[in-house]
Length: 640
Image (cartoon, rainbow, N blue to C red; front, side, top):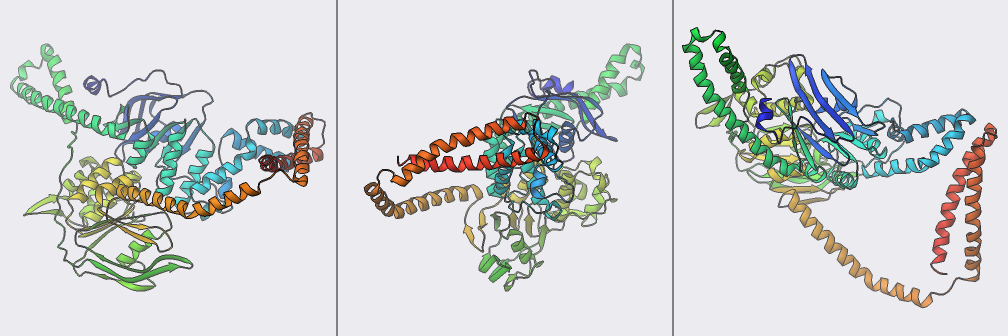
């Protein structure tokens, strides 16, 4: 009630007029860890909500509760009847043996289940079931469902539809799961980190796809550009409560700052009052009778307020890194390929002191391989990397989570160093450093196995930074890190007195951190661009436009010549074409009539199993024949 009295316009305990989902009084804890308490909110048609919170605050747990995969302590979760819901889990799992295409049909969606029922009825010669299924297949337009699945998979760079799911990488499996959700066309879609494992091209495609759709969305993502362009509302879990902001990510940042300032100001006032009341409590032991009980109770309530953690805001942490000389590294005629796939070819580059470089490009273009060659994990086929003697790499990799799960968080970091050197004789303890990276004192003394996936990523980042490197190499550091941690990391890198290379698909993060790009465009085509990602995209749009105009100009004379030739030679249909055109006008209606009569006959219940199967096959042939003849009729009609 204290928070509600402070922010009645921001902390929304009740949202009326909910058409899709209403959550009331929801509480969830794991042992003594309370994630959220008595939270209430709703999702209406057309709302696109981004969910933000620190790792370990319960984002994924909340999504799992809504999806029915997780229990809760108290409260209610109520959906509109017959609501179609799609849920993309953070780590999707499919039964072994399924192909990619079968995994796309692994769903409770009505159309998907109908297709499965159709195939089962055909295989089992179940004529009774087929009668109803065929009618429903037409009603739900299920015949083109497979084609739609293949189109979305292709957009997500999945082209081997017969590959088994157990042969896929984690990133490929996540993309198959995303396709599974999208093709079912749900009314409410729940997404847990949808842009993880998507390259920039796929992310921008998904961004446009979700922006155009009328579906409702609740999603967790660290991609702030994606959040800004897709969502029209932001919801934050903070101090076990829900705060809701009617606007995009930029609006949220502004209003959150106002809320934090108001909270800290109120906490400051409460702290001053607490000092006076504490003095009264010490001076007046005789007053602690029935007469003063109300004041004693008020004192204890005030004490609770004062002990609430404050938001420290932005902290400027300038860590003294190890000395780095003027020579960093030189790439000399480096070449690398895997079979026919070229990663780099005769690549040369001299890295400057204090340079902060970003590496971007589509998946499979060799970004991570380039990094591994730099730090010595992978050998080039030819050429070499000449590394300066003073360089001390700090490498954050995609697969670097290797902890003793039975250790405490603070011990993991303390095993690396006892303190952080800030320079000028100043030091920061491990506990203070962990607190800067959002590990509160109680979380620091938790065992590693109790941490969420995002918190383990944050701990891994701390272990890399504690090694006092002067050259940070960060391979996809934004995956599974929450937005608040990314803000902290961005501020850290701004003041980092060393070199940085970042491989990332997070456009916002790249814009904040790097001042130079290597763009991997595939087949050893690497563009050296002096600017951040947004500047590169603006430059590329101009270049693409210029190239298109130049190509149009080159083709214009030939096109004009062809048009002139066509105009001069254009004539009426030949006698043979006229006969074909007239025949098609008669054939197409007859084929459509046959299809209609066949569907009626198959629904009558009078056909044998063999006749039903033959009828199903004939319908498929008729659809294909009608489409083919209609296309030819359209071609001839242009000449008629």
